[in-house]
Image 1: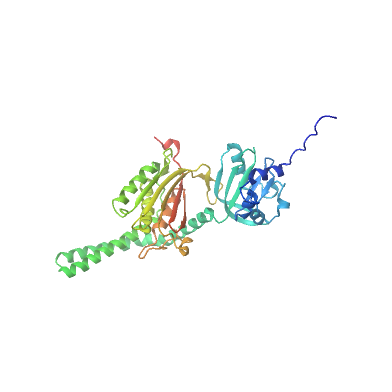
Image 2: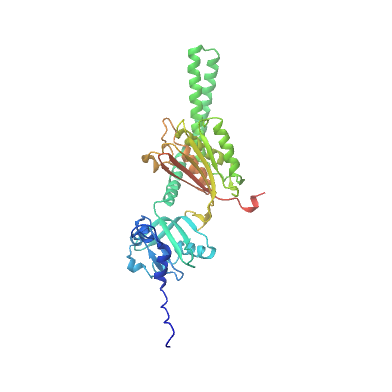
Length: 385
């Protein structure tokens, strides 16, 4: 009809969403698409119709498809209908909160099977549009690595558990005999008997540590105030091995209690703080103890479709020299240690205890900043007073 303005053609969904994530950055020819294409991790966007409307170069490589083949195509035509990624997308669309899931398998005939972690977030001001990122070499692989090596450690130490009784009995006899000799010995001989006692004590302590790996009894769990545990560990450290360290505490006061075993959590944190105290310099050494609530962090239980919520993050950060590169891949393995004379059982035991809690421990390390972070389940409401 003459005089009426022509209707503007409706903008295609596949043209709208890239603008939502592209953004504009100050600088010549630099936009969000350029930044995302520089990332090594796959990042893509799915619109409210379930179609892929943006994919960076890493996504093209991961899915072995060109942008032309990806854009405008339904994600359900690319991945199997039972892929866990669809339930994550629905969770974000329904709840509006970002979600992260570790230990997810993405599998297609074209790309094979990939063990990954996935982050899904809602795109601001675009209802139903979600951004998805995939990390193939992240915590997911660390978790798998920890599970494999923790089970291997258990199989090795099962024999140690059987022998422990036979080893500890003669050791106690040797120690008792050394103490009897010490009563009538001269100064030089007393030095030798003291050495015998010290070494037998060291071997007994080592055997006891190894025994813990084969302990398959269910944990006695309760609602644990992790801040009280951290405060207890800090006091122990400051009165002993960490007198030279300045502690920084950054806590979330609203954090709900951990569902765990208080004594074992003290053991874990004491081990991490002791390692940190030994790593920091005598002058200017700092250890930060921190807690925070991470909404939407979940772990897929190996061998099942069950998912465990892990919203409680507890971290120990130090300003030491960092972990040697050649140890990083095997840090949670038994008998691996950067310390001269170390048994290499401390972090392996830490990984086992956290795993027994249904949690996860990861680390990041560079010179002057090493972070160990645990992600733990919160106590069910019926366990809270």
